[in-house]
Length: 191
Length: 157
Image (cartoon, rainbow over all chains, first blue to last red; front, side):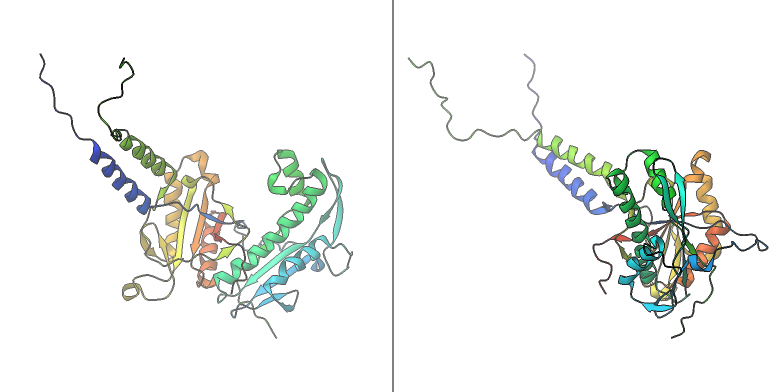
């Protein structure tokens, strides 16, 4: 008869693996990185001609070193910025002071009003990052809401929920995100 | 007829705990797979600003991080916001080399898709960020991502 081998007590094994589990829980971070995506303009040759943009099409946003916001020459609060930007870009009242609207033929959408508006964002070296992100956030939100409105009207879905590539492209063509950042200078707001 | 006689042993039978460790190990592997270990230790303090319009950062392997914030070790580096690349405090001048090295480390097909994530503290001034952005433009690293935490309301101040 074979000798009976002694059984190993496996009860403490779970304790060990629990220890490992807690160790990994503590050292690893679950948070996914989120942020606002932007594309920088390619470097300009010094003798490049300035792009011709009509003055009425430029939505001027400036932040000074005291984190004060100036929109179209007037002091404003960040909470107003989204609606102001949307109003300027979509220009529902056809105001000659706001951005030009051109009818363009876009596949899937047919003739669509396309705004020629460009947001020009200026900031000072002393502007805080927090304020800058808050402004960028509002501008992004303005474009996102415009896209959502168009997308819901045409396809019955929010822009982020669109699945078909041609639909996404059509909405992107109709409402391009045009935020231009000035070459860094010191933005001054004259009160 | 005692055919269905109960066992003589009374009381609760012992539960076999042998498989418990397997379950815990499964947990462990699950967590190891879904979490990311911080690649570099931070030498600068970063509290990201909040924003509502944030997007998830896709393809972690193609992202290079630039950390900007006030140094934790104020004795050594002072209190002014500094730039951290990889594992050391650096200056704006080191950025070009850093981006070049990051590019070299990736496959050629992936290089156009590379993103630079700027993780800056909310108190940092835009001056240093403008310098960083200009430097990134010079080396053609144009896809950037301003790191921000998802929040409900940005006018919390």
